[in-house]
Length: 187
Image 1 (cartoon, rainbow, N blue to C red):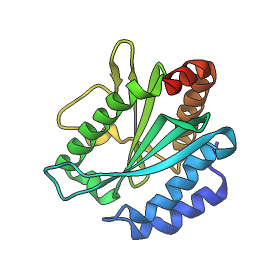
Image 2 (cartoon, rainbow, N blue to C red):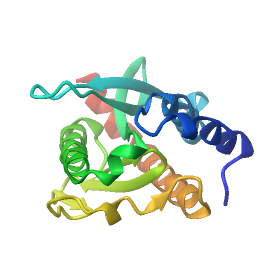
Image 3 (cartoon, one colour):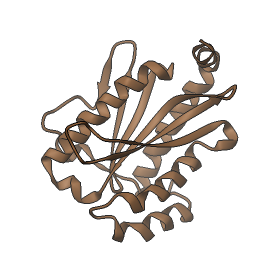
Image 4 (cartoon, rainbow, N blue to C red):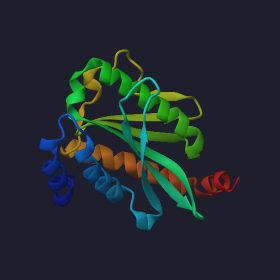
């Protein structure tokens, strides 16, 4: 199942300009997240910039929130890095650690049994999930983060299918646990 042509066009138009700067990819990824988590279905995608204290490097993270009674609740996130960083072992290791930290932090806010996150080096993706009850994380931690971990190309049919599957899994959990999320927000 391929992406709609306008999604492919948006990425293809920006990829030549994003080898060392992920900025051109923000628009296409925001459009993709809005496609997967529509505002009309009470989802809101927010951009956050995080900078580790010991670094001048910033990371852009898009967090998808579920809107409930004018409150928001995080349910999914995507971290974007320039495609050129993929070849650098220390960059992959730092991103892997960062994503794992996000998963653990957001899992307690999410109110979902599993929280999904995606790390993107350009359009090369690694899918993460964290199960709150048993603290199980996929993929398992391997130091340093192997390049093969980012093994899904977003613009391929497999990439579209996996991203859609993860989004649908998240939306299904939100639908099943809607009352739990309302209770968490009203506290």
